[in-house]
Image (cartoon, rainbow, N blue to C red; front, side):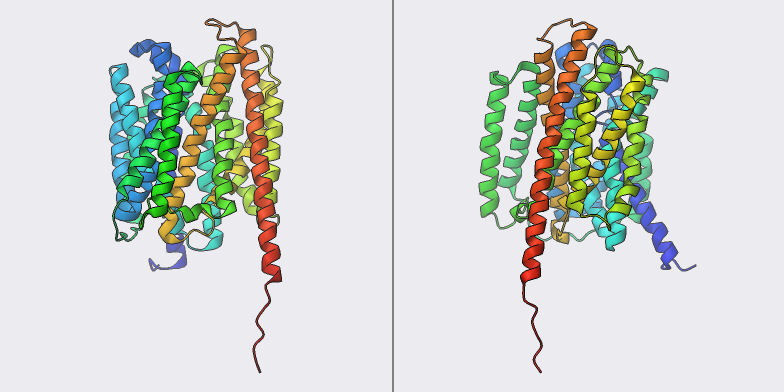
Length: 480
């Protein structure tokens, strides 16, 4: 059979999708894979209560701060080339993290993992768009890609629970090494290389956005630890505002901006970025706090905690097929609004937990959340890349992933403060007090979904206005 036959082409694209998804899943679940192992890591490496959060925060800080720079590097140097370099560095950093003999070295390795992911991840979605030019195939590929992003955190908790229970928390990090080697073996052969763009790095723009995003993430992390009114919180957040405003001014004047501001001119795309921040903030924090509830209140083991997420994870992947069926039949903005409403109902239902709630009784809530979040994350990825030119694909992909990471940081910071206020910062809260704190967290997370619903209404209204304008444009009549 000819290698250019339709079946051979389909197999080639399937491998491309596998490589991209493998990298995306590896780096997405890495943010949560240590969640169920934190107690074990604290004991083994001698972390303090205050420093323990940096196991996750170091990764998120480097990842969120450098994503847009990583996207621009892919545009200029070639996306496959940057993808391979980022994956190779991530694999090496994972080996270092898994073997780390001290708390300091583990945090350093996690920072290096975040840096590497910031350069590899923006290229994944851009390479996917390039590899699947046909609209139907592209829609299916984006849906699967989005499901992997959405399910990555819960998959990480499941995998981390299994390793922590039966082997060691270190295997949650070391598993990336063989996966990374497999991706590196396949990528040069199957991934298409994009042409290098002529131009240069917008150094001032890169500097202001990297420092601004890093300051924002750092300030949010500190807010969760020392409160919103502490100088350790206010100074970096103020710096972030100044730097990000400066970044916008620089981009307006730059001949070759690191992020073309035209990407924000679409209501769909801008709404998708904001909506993603909100729903990822709600869901990422739910994974974190629900894991704590299951272990600290209900007394589950790391393995049992991970297994509790299987139904929700299954819903994330099942929604790929639901979206494929529904998209041609239902307006996408209407479907988005419906999915967000479903997720809000599931989260509000989950917020009814108390110290006596059984694990079995929260499974329906998790299933409802999985349906709503699973559909929403697929559609928001689609809207975030809607009508993007090939030359802007890397920047748009970077914005989608930046919104994802910043959403997790914002959500976790806000809801950690909510939890602390609900338990009155009791240094040794009992199970009833803890359960009350977790319920308060899920109440506020419900509000995140309500705000996202308002964004969906704006997107729906904008789409209808555009449709009306298109319908009123007169059709030219040929002479003769």
